[in-house]
Length: 115
Image 1 (cartoon, rainbow, N blue to C red):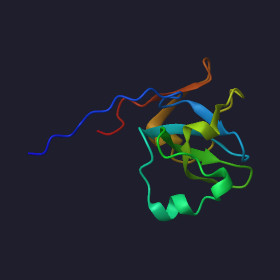
Image 2 (cartoon, one colour):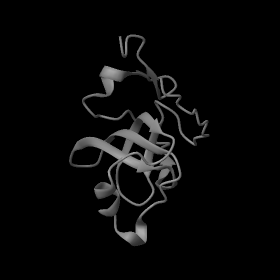
Image 3 (cartoon, rainbow, N blue to C red):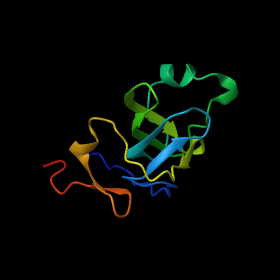
């Protein structure tokens, strides 16, 4: 049995928070977090070098949207800001994972998610 080291990383955002990209016009809800970059080298190298983020930081999986479409995004912490619009995300998979609290204008993980 192989031991797996546990690395505790502080993150700026949490599961269920709505965030927006600081450079590009999209927003989304966080559904997973990697403590550091965990995607392909090909994906990473496709980012223009002048805006390529460091690998040694948290990366967030988002159910994202822009004016035209919904998709899944993978974004470095340095490129995210809190979205304070108070509006729910329209991505079609949001309701599979989260419940929207209209009073608090925030998401909570559904009780039955993952079961």
